[in-house]
Amino acid sequence: MSHRSIGQEKFGFLRQSRSSSSLDEIDALVAWEPVTKLLEALYPATKGEPAWPPLAMFKALLLAIWYDLSDVKLAEALDDRVVQAFLRLLGQ
Image 1: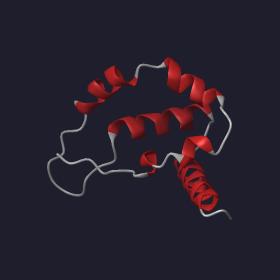
Image 2 (image 1 turned 90 degrees about the vertical axis):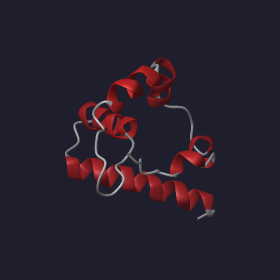
Image 3 (image 1 turned 45 degrees about the vertical axis):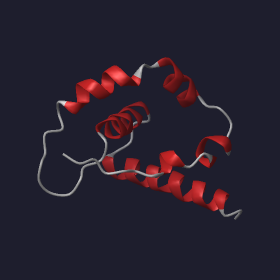
Image 4 (image 1 turned 30 degrees about the horizontal axis):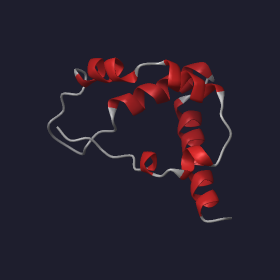
């Protein structure tokens, strides 16, 4: 079973380039390791392309619920944030 690497979590500029938000506070309050262990049981695929990390997908679903986003709007919002982070890295 292979996990797809998102990659952006390895870049330190993502957190340093913006001020703290309520999502940062939630991230600090929640113990994600037990959630990760529970989600691993839902990840049995052994064939096909590597899937996204279960915890990342769970957090994306939480964002969709909290901000009342459709699947399309969630994908657009996540894509927009990644593009903004890379533009900040490039100094644009």
